[in-house]
Each structure stands twice: as structure tokens, then as C-alpha cells.
Length: 273
Image (cartoon, rainbow, N blue to C red; front, side, top):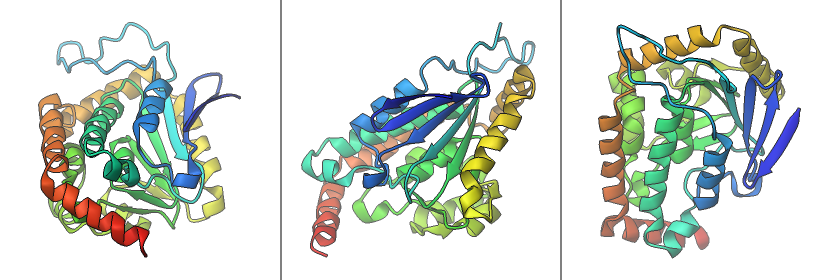
């Protein structure tokens, strides 16, 4: 297995190149999202094309599958991803809005990519981290994993995640998660449909996720990608217009004075406390 470090992400290839493992590797900062993170993720996903627009007469007009068609996203350390780098957002007023825009592009790229993306989540997947996990096709988690969008307390709307969240969870579950800011357990996330499997033996999560990705890699790539394309069409998560509008809705809140005030107060209390 060959690995390449793209600070703060590590990329390795497994199963004769059929699986690309993308590991968030900035464990000391709980794998927060900032410019370096988004740049690294863009490089990590380089070369994976997007699914073409759905066409009932030609469901999957892909001439060849010449790229790793399974991607496994996991993370080092006790947390999967704690969301945006709040220090950066406090120190630079435009950072929060820019991070929302980059998050929207990343989640759209994952959901519409011509590959099956599996997330392996341990610990906290919060705010942008929850959006990242939710954008993946299949999410496997440890019993100690936690999920949620506690972003209203800093004046940012989680709307950027809603085109996927509201169309893959039940209406009541997506509303509760998006409006309450409540952080839920892996068991609750499983009941909602936010995640798909809990590995009860936490120590076995990594190996279980690798085995699952490897098993997917043995299946017919065109069959899998055709299935993903049709699933995206059925749940409407292939709607680029809705995804763009949702990103701009979140960006609008991130640019507002309310966000600057609430974020500043939150950061001050956290720093003093």
C-alpha cells in the first residue's frame, strides 16, 4: 500500500488501486476545516470524474472506469472532524463564508462523483464534519461517534447540508437535526438514517471499514455507478441548482453581523473557560 501525505490529509491506495483511502490526519486540531484542509481534499479527490447528467436513454454514458471507484474517508485521532477552524473565522471575517462555499463544493463533489464514497466515523462529526459524512454514500461509525450541526450558536445556518440531509433522512429527523443543533449519538443517527452501520467493537472500526470498501471494489463498477446515479436521481441529490442555493443561503448568514457577534462571543467564552 502506497501512502502520500498532503497536509492535513493522507492518501493511500489499496486493493490494487481500486480503493483510494483518504485519511484526515490533523488529529491534534480534531481535523478542523480550513483552507489547507479544503486544498488537501481537492488534491485527494483529484482525477475522479463527476457522474454525467441523468439520461433515461443512456443511464451511464461512461466509456471506461479507469480510476479508483471506491473512496474510503476516515480520520486519525479521537474525532472525525470538528467542523470549521473557528480561530481562523474569528481572526479573519471572510473566512467563515469562504469555508461554507468550499464545504458546499466538497459535499457536492462527493455526492455527484463517479465513485462510491464510504465514510468511517469515530468520535465527533460536527457541523462541517457532519455535512462531510452525510454527503458520503455509505457511513460506518463507532458506538462513540456523535453527529450534529451546532452552528446556530455562532450565527451560521447549516442550509449548505440540507439538499442532501433533507432528502435522505425523514422530514422530521432532518428538521430536528438542522434546527435544534442537537448532537446525537451513533445509535440515534442510525435510527434516523444518517449513518448506515455501527461497528460495536470500536477497535475494529478501521478494519471493518477497509473490508467493506474492499468488498465494494470487487463488484461491477459500472453496475455500482449506474445504481448511484439512479439513487441520486430518485432522492434529487443530483440537483445542482438546489445545492448552489443552499450554499449561498449559509454563506449569507456567515457574512452577517449576527455571525460575527455570536462567533466572537462564543470564541471568547471558550477561550476563557
